[in-house]
Image 1: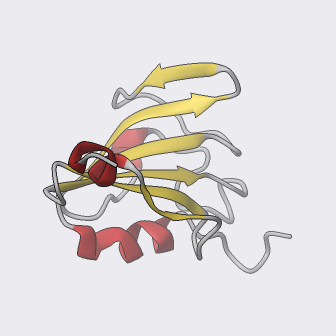
Image 2: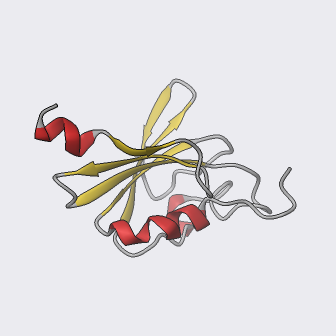
Length: 111
C-alpha cells in the first residue's frame, strides 16, 4: 500500500455514536474527511430540517457536500439537510470528531 493510499483509507468504518460512518485522514493527518448520516426530524436532530448556515458546526469544520440518494449536492449556505442525507464534512482538527458525532446524534424521542 502506498503512503497516499494509507492516508486516504477509512480509519474507522461502521456506525459510531452519531452515525459518523467513515473518517478519512487527508494529507497525512493534516485534515479529516467525515461522512455522517442525518437521522430524525427537526425536533430530534440538530441538523435535519436546517439550512447549513443554521447548523452550529465545531470549530474548523466545513460541510462540503450532501449525498441524497444518487444525487450529490455541493454545499451552499441555503442548502437544507434532510433525513437520511449523507453529509460530507472536512475538519482540520481530528479531536473535534466527537463534536461531530454529538451534532449528528438524535434525541431520545427518535426511534
